[in-house]
Length: 444
Image (tube, rainbow, N blue to C red; front, side):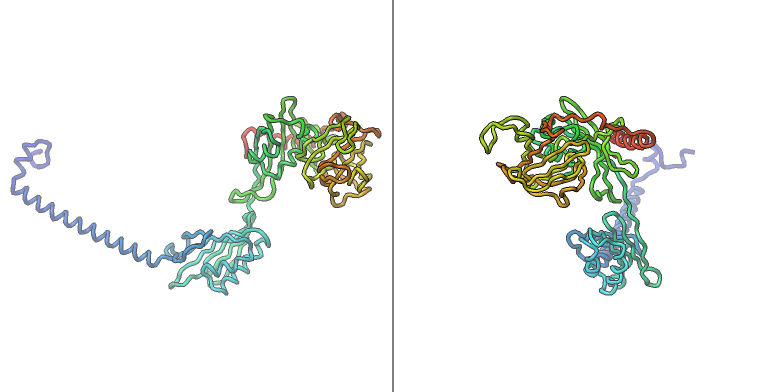
């Protein structure tokens, strides 16, 4: 059976079956077949090149994109006849002009912009995706999607019969928790926090949240560790929307550590609690001004102006003119105005009978007047150098039972510490646990 086939793995059978003449004839046949294949390839390549050239000449997107404008081909009625433009506008007021600039006639641009504008904010950037079709060399409107930074907006499209149809887009927002850690440098908490990427808007709230446990001008030094967690709303593109909200703050020094959680009781004010649900609020904050340097402590000293030994009945916090001053505790304003060597000063009587004084202010905060009740941490004025002063600073005093005491040594009243119970405690635990889970994971 094998004798019937020329193909064999035996060379002797190849020689017997394949004569020189047959070899020549086979060579000629192979050359002819090769020429036919090359001709076919050349013809195919020519057709492809011709088609590519035709497609390039008739390409739909013949306009050159302007800086900041992306162009690509959208899904539409025929990919080869579609044009897309992505426009980033400073406000909705620019929409009509932009539509005309990128191919729509004046009447259509006005109609499309009018349809989309009610869904767009009066202020803020607008992202618009314009889709058109090229028909007989002319551009014809197909679809526009215009959205606000929060992803809300409108879609305007050409429906059957050419009429414009509009549909609204709902905002797509989500909240994520961001966790950050840092080590204090040798300069300040501000520079330490900024150095690890903490948003500037969170630096003051962080210091206030821990104001009952730490004096950031005296208690915190280089090498101390801090941690915070904050909530940030983002749009569908993952871009931050609105201001971040501080949820958790902690500081660890060589001598102590403290951690606080933000919690708002139903219908109540926002307060800070430790992990066990006990409020950390005290009658007075440790420091009534942010970012200041203690330039003079409580006690006897040589007065810098009078040049004789005199009791310095408070603490001086040196800070630039205009630095905000806060009420160290809730109470009622008993005095607010200029008073000789004290300069512009405010006196607050607190609910437990204690009094605090704030001297040498540059000016008072709006609404601060005698008889007005202020909340703890509310701004009451600005640092200045009025009265008998050698430079911009806040002179801060605490009076207990009519006597001046060292603000740095005032101890919190144990009766002030209140703990959450019942349903409030259960609600707080859910908030606390969510924050702690994200702290363990890093962020969410």
